[in-house]
Image (cartoon, rainbow, N blue to C red; front, side, top):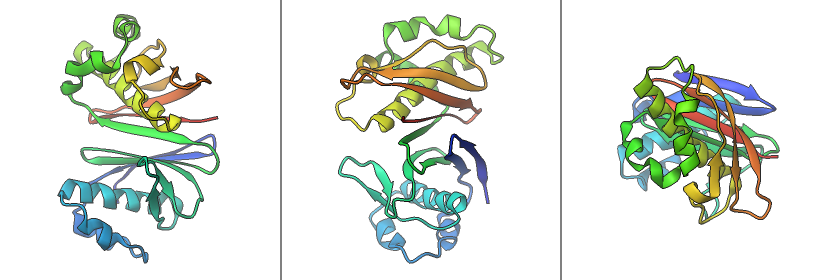
Length: 220
């Protein structure tokens, strides 16, 4: 079973699944009395079915039992039994989940693709764009790859912040800010939001992989 990675962090559980099985094999591994087939019948794309199944297989792997996933009107996922706070993400070939018994969690996984470079100014502010040269000092990656990781991390981290906030009408370039950091294969940096009256600040952790970047964080 391709459990790619699973780790603990301050009572939270975070995991990534590499989706290598067929949808038939994924479905066969789910034995619980949940309406899987009814849900699947509403998903027309094979890729969406694969994501649906892989997330539930991954949850069963890390929780020791299958879990029913529900969604709030906003689309935010939650577990029907209330056992954990939940965040879900997926990209080509991978799904990721974050769980915590009490605190809100956010996780995001993004395929490494140069397409993000074309729209960087839509979600990064001027200071973030200007901070690239300093962030890449001492980075072991090749310059072009490091620059791609730097931009993609901003997108992924802001997706993670957005999931944690639970707010609507969030402008990634105006309301969310990633503070300066030095890019490494894994690490942490701070992110803050000015969308709410409280103006919260979060610690965001990350990992780089040839296929993806992954960011995750927890609320207070």
